[in-house]
Amino acid sequence: MDYVLPLLLVLLAVVNTNLVRVALRTGRIQSRLLPLERAANASGFWMALLFQGLVTVLCLAAAALRLSELL
Image (cartoon, rainbow, N blue to C red; front, side, top):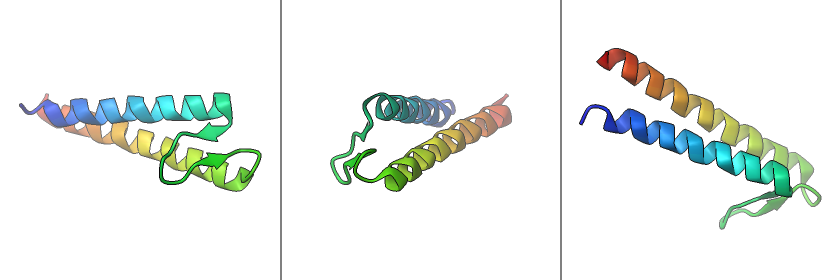
């Protein structure tokens, strides 16, 4: 049961990485709340990608920290 949180964090990091990959390929952020296109709002697009990258790094760091405490 102790490994559930790190696994969920890794899964969230994988999903975020996939969202960034799709956004870079299509030029659109896949979001229901705030759809962004690179051509329409370049700075917002890149800031959203930067935020997603930050979330990915934080999720992986938290998962690694939690796993290191368990081992």
